[in-house]
Length: 77
Image (cartoon, rainbow, N blue to C red; front, side):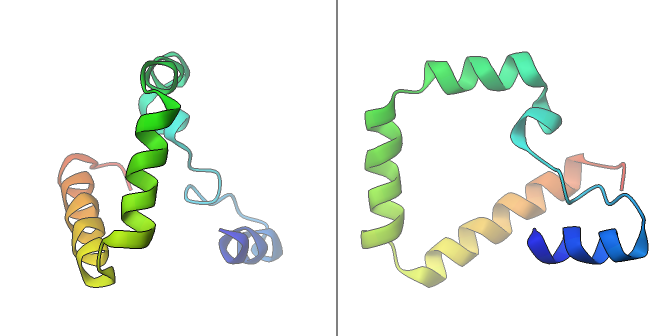
């Protein structure tokens, strides 16, 4: 993100990916609802699993699948 923002700052152009957040994708109200709905214990447990237990190639494979699904539905590039 830092690299994208620095490069687009030098080029004086606005880049879509620089300030992309969850609230920009699904909206402010929806993202606040999701954040308050999910408990911190659930997030902590899953992050511990991702960081300590899951093999790295599984993480990369899952990330690739998520990006593939997003790219199938997002048509505005």
